[in-house]
Amino acid sequence: MNYISNIYTIYNYHRLSSIDYNTIKLLVQLLVHFHKITKFADRKTNNMKTKATASIILDPVSKANKRALKLQVTYNRRSDRKSLGGSIKISQEDYLKRNKAYKEAFEEIRPKFQRAQNIIDELGENFTWESFRAAWKDEAWGRKKIAGKYTNRTIRELYDEYFCTENKTFSPDTKEIYYILVQWIEQFNSNTKLHDITVDYLHKLTKYIKEQSFQRRNKETTDTTIAIYMRGLRAVYNFAIDKGYVDKSKYPFGRNKYKLASRKSANIALTEEEFQLFIQATPQNYKEKLGYNFFFLSYALDGLNLADIIRIKNRDITTDNKLIVGRWKIRNTLTDEETQEKTLMDIALYVLKEYGTIDPSQPNKYVLRFLDDVEDEDIEQQDIKKKNLNKNINKGIKSICERIGIKPFSLYSARHTYATHGINNGIPIEIMSRNLLHTNIITTQGYIDRISNSNQIKNNELKEKKLQSFKKL
Image (cartoon, rainbow, N blue to C red; front, side, top):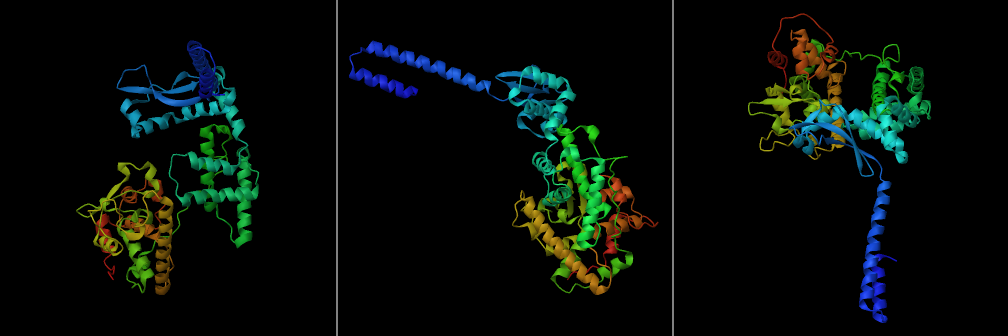
């Protein structure tokens, strides 16, 4: 019988009996007192079952403007704080707002925080302060316990966790490429676990992929393509090491282990002759015009990728026809130094207006109409729209190529063609790397298909000369 019904029963008993009022009052007071004791005991019992938690706090002792971040572990209303390194300090304002300064500081201490969380998860209901402190002091003990728990997970489970917990926004294309290898692994050995991924296993898996792909389509999967798949597995394996699921000594990639095939630059840049034949061609239908216009739009914008072109917004275009642009593919780590101001030539302005509207009064609106009905946050739908557009552009380019008698190429060739032509005409590779928005000059070197020595010509002058034959239809 609960507290309210007890009082109600006493009330009715008093009403129907001859017990005096003071006696009833005393009984009620005793019942209230008993209820308080019971409630406190229940709360204490519940607290005893509370799971330990880890959190990041500002040093409560320091009075400085910027204070050190501390790891706080709480269990049964008792807290214990651990130092995370005195050099990591932020202000209280940054801490409360969880802004960029806080996120950068947290990234530095994430491994220690995650290790504490892993130890708590491993200990579970057996958590005691003594066992936690022993694990925290002895890193080998903690990692061994955690690794033993997680090495029996399937590769698909590990991939799923990677995409759920990594602080990045992955495009559907990236996920698709990652999971292609998961499908191959499941076909090769459906029971593959993390501890099975060894150097020998990876060599056997590579051989299996080549043999099976040849049987299915009479064409062997290249080492370069397999390397693309394996880079995903390498990223997930590094994730597992960071989490403490596997020891770093088991890492199967690298020198004298399983080595990924290096990326070979495909010779996809147009020759001078092919470029001239293509620019002088006259598109015959909508798709040919689409392919023609977007190829030279990309070329005029220093080989800008379609993913970057379709996401140009009105706010990115200045009043003096300059375009402020960065790479969409590195948007998660983009800094001001990795954006660039490009001059919008007449050809670029013509194509942008042909397929969209430049309207400064709507700064957050896309210039091109292809993403008009898609929300900024809907990356998956944006990628679908981009894929469909790219498909139609390439169909148009292929149609023109077949008609004028040159080897078909894709829109991506505009980027390689721009880079190769620029280097051939004396543009320093450092400048070219900057124009292509590469974060590493080694990437730019891979773009250079045909290099010849010529006099140096400034970038915009070169493009003006190259695009003189462009037809505004």
